[in-house]
Length: 318
Image (tube, helix red, strand yellow):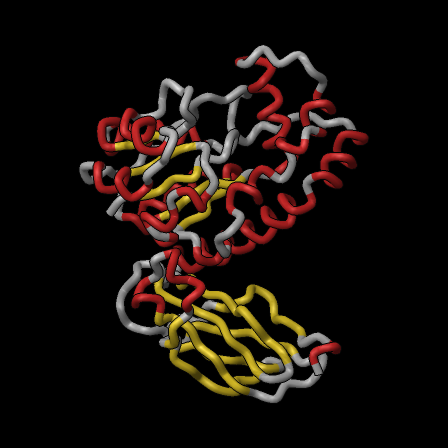
């Protein structure tokens, strides 16, 4: 099994990467940090940064790497290593931007103001853009910088690793220390990074749920309610450890159990993410629902709820 680490800048990624080097050895990690980076592995430069990139030949040329890592979007390698083997860390967006600005000033001789930095379109919603194209619920593991120790607990359990905790490449005394921001900057940062803020809030709630399950020795399921309308509901679900057994999913309408269905239908749109069971992880329940009905699913074996809060049927769906 090879892991794919989406290294979003200033999210404790360097700490994680160097912990992984200590655990796996740097020789078993392949890096793609751009054509001009000294860190980028020779095979990545040869196959990915040539005039005609060949991702499949890159994959074939590798000798059983433990991890692929880089400042790359998730779509770069997810179809080669699968969403289940993909991991990343997210950080409170405003603090992440402040930390990246400090990094640019300190290490890259950046001369612009903080406002000039965060107003650059390339610096907005960096976390959301890194994960575009893949449903958050399908990603193998999403940790939180602010809860780094707990994140490593869950990550090491999920992937059967023992990656140690480190704090590297930090501009403050500790990872959890806060950058002080002016009120005017805060207001503008929130406006410019709305998608990152929504992502972080959702990922934090998802992590809370997963960590609670982990502490209760309950398996985690990647699960999503894709559609809920006046004609029924559909979605997908599979065990995080990718065991072959299909999940039984309970459908709750207005807090009442209405039916149980097996997640064993083909979800073709997921196949490029290499889900377990060849993509036969979906479910569909035809059901007459009324406007303002609430819908939520649960994993029958564990009680895990998805979505995290009940979804209300849109009045326009009737």
